[in-house]
Image 1: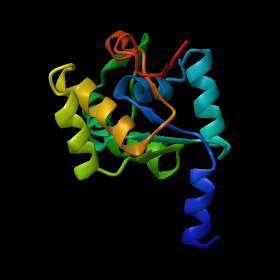
Image 2 (image 1 turned 90 degrees about the vertical axis):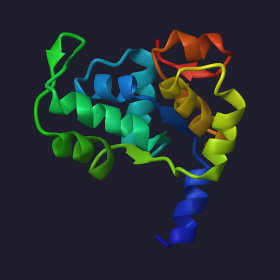
Image 3 (image 1 turned 60 degrees about the vertical axis):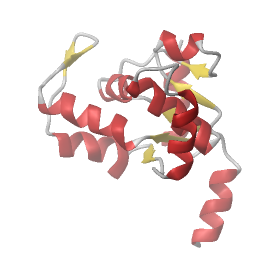
Image 4 (image 1 turned 180 degrees about the horizontal axis):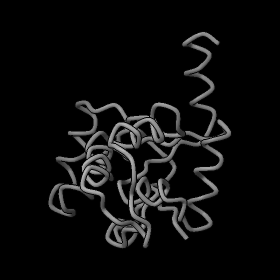
Length: 147
């Protein structure tokens, strides 16, 4: 498949933005039904899941500290987690650029840094929804997927 064909194919499928919590819960196989459905579709190549580099960094930090997620202790190295998510997994790193920072500048007063960067990436990339358990994002009328 050529790069142009791959780009066209990606545009024809739904794209989602995932936050760090969604990625961590995916790693321990404890996603709720709707979020699990989206990740399964991404594993099958039917949808695309993007995450900002800051969210991926949060996941790698958590794994390096052996943090527990949903009663399951994270195991493996940060590189193992990166491979499971991005290297061999269903997630790609969203482009960080001026578009994201332009969106972030517009919403900086509404969110924490973490939530603001997730929402800014979602807006800049024009994704269908944010995969998150975060009520602040949901309460801000941002389309979310979780339950």
